[in-house]
Length: 139
Image (cartoon, rainbow, N blue to C red; front, side, top):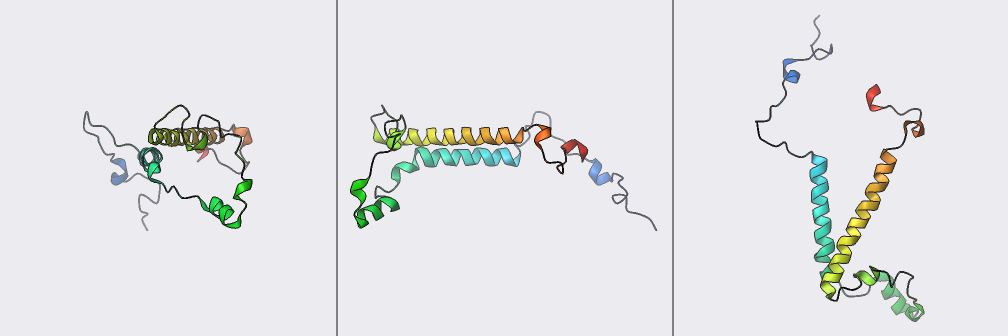
């Protein structure tokens, strides 16, 4: 009984071939980078441009507070006077530009904080890993 070459761990002619990139041609970005770039572009467009067309009607919590009669007890939050308070950038007089900039800055800050946390968690020292986890070099 003969074994198939792939079952015995031997390389087959099909697995030995590697696609050749023509000289001067650029390789396509990995799918994860492409996805990230498209996601970032869509997020910036939505935050910077589409957000201006959001409904001016009150949100659900405000609507319920008005309907139930306790909206008069509403207080301003502590960050109302911050540079990005009240859905705009302080010092920018054009309402549309102010809201768009606030959205783009918010996307950037969220990306920076989320990316930073991801990087910290990913770069943990080997001693903090669980004993059952395998390192890429041991596979």
